Every structure is written in structure tokens, then in C-alpha cells.
Picture 1 (cartoon, rainbow, N blue to C red):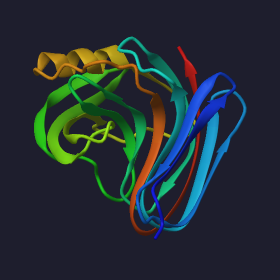
Picture 2: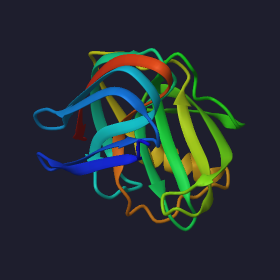
Picture 3: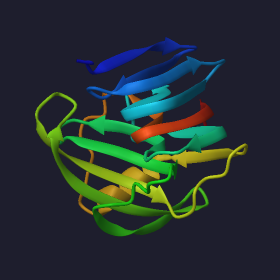
Length: 201
């Protein structure tokens, strides 16, 4: 039986990680490039994986620049700023683009504008395992109204999302957990290719 796998490390001063779900099959090739660049390609993949580059500890005040050079994803999943908090447990996303299956689900909270883009805010309770192996956690996410463009520089001012979520009554807890510009995919027999560069604004 295939086991869940997790790899992480540092590269050019950035934290990186690659996680694959239990029983995942198929090919995933992750590579760190210069600076804050990384690329991932996959084929015939069954299951869920997340990977990306960022920081070993999250922060409400991060301002992330990024350029998404290539984005192709035949499955579900998302690309954006991602992390967790403890006390309480939240899994948070700022979704910039996504694959064939939209990540928009749960309870719709509202729409706001940040860094020149409109975002819809959603939340839902998840009954699965949190990052420490306990039961249950909440997802909170901002998803762009229109998908981000490739080949151009963009900015995510995370404080805008943090404060908007807080205004709805959902305040993130301790952020001393890695936060990355994530590429995530799920589904059956999926394929894709992503190339991304991030930097601190």
C-alpha cells in the first residue's frame, strides 16, 4: 500500500514542500528554480497533492509578489497563497486561479476588492484531520472573481484578506506554520504544468 508522503526543505532562503495524499498514484515532478521560482508537472495522477514555495512561518502582514508563467491543470485544485493556523485551526487560501473544478463551495460571506482584483469569500467546516492530526478544522478562502493572468506580475496583500475574514467573525489563530504559494491538484488521471516565481514586496 502506498503511504502518504511529505517532503520539505529550504531553497534560496525560501521554504518549499511537496505533500501527496494516502494511496496517490501517478507521476509528480517538483523542482526548485532560482530565487523564489518553482515548477511542477504531473501526469496520470490520481489523488491529491500540494506543493509550493514560501516561508517556514506565516504572517498576517505578508505582501507577496508573484508571476505565474505557466498554468495548466486538467483536474480540480487551486493556485494561490496558502497556509494553516492553530488555536483555532484554519486552513486558509487566497485562490488566484484553479483547474477544471472550481474551489468555490461552502458558505458565501461576501465580495471585496484587494490589489485591484475582486474576491469572493467562502468558509466551510471540514470533519477531516487538522494539521496536527486532530479532528475537524475550518477552511476560509478568498477566491478571485476572475482568474489571474499568466506572465504578469501580481501582488497579494495578505493583511487585506486576514482583516476581511476577521470582519466576518473568522480570525486566524497562531500563524507559526509554513505558508506557501501553493499549487494543488486533486482528481483522477489528472495532468498539468505550473511554473511560478514569488518574492516579498
